[in-house]
Image 1: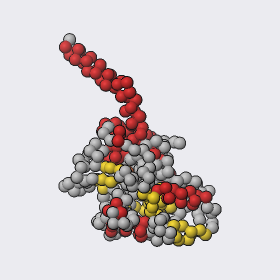
Image 2: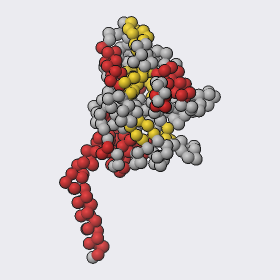
Image 3: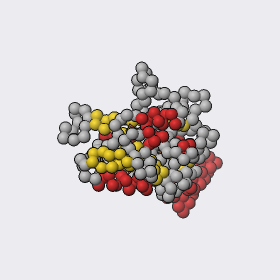
Image 4: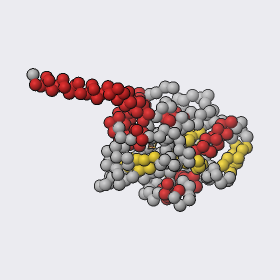
Length: 311
Ligand code: SF4
Ligand code: SF4
Ligand code: SF4
């Protein structure tokens, strides 16, 4: 698996931040919680209607975001403090591989709700937390000190910061946990007309993703829609899938899983290792502290400087 220089720098920055904060590393559970909830986004079913973006905005009471084109009311092109999810489009340009059969495609960006989240590990005051039951990664504005470690640590560039506010906060998707408390599902999945954004227990979503990868291309098949537990289905002609569930293994796994016909790199998703950045930093911490090597080295250094200054 290849890593770009940017990925390495990002990993190093995250590892450094987690090492520097060092607070949450010991309390981490690196396994998927048994009642983990998530989203399966299938780009082959997405028609780019952006109903999910509007639904998200309504459910989370967010202002319009004309950052992509100021003459339009709401036209975000990236995640922002006003947009917790965006649908982005890839179009093949003339210089790219002509033999590639799929020429364009959509991708939905949002918080991936990592199994072992770097943002949680990097936060020095536990303002980012992972729910032990559902695995949803939430943000507590009352605890946040505005250091933005979570923003720098996130390998998917998700958290955004309200630079324009006198009392700024971090903003990111919280899997509509306020709706979950009322028995509802994530707004983006509630309104998706094609079943491209599907909500439910992560284990069921993984099984469904594997079923789709095994379907023969070009056949009409039924796909669960909105919430995988309800039995509601829509029919589609099956596409040719990349044989990869993005998020199943990347950096320890994520609760938002992605399927696509296009290579994920074309959709802006990096090729990532299987071990989480938080796990890498924990290994370094354990190695440094094993046998008290680091404290002894620091003490020896300190004694050396004291002696030298005395002389
Ligand atoms: S995608 Fe980023 S913000 Fe979301 S849980 Fe993972 S590390 Fe945290
Ligand atoms: S889960 Fe909720 S907050 Fe997250 S992208 Fe979907 S609608 Fe927005
Ligand atoms: S609502 Fe569904 S089909 Fe429409 S853009 Fe969002 S994910 Fe794609």
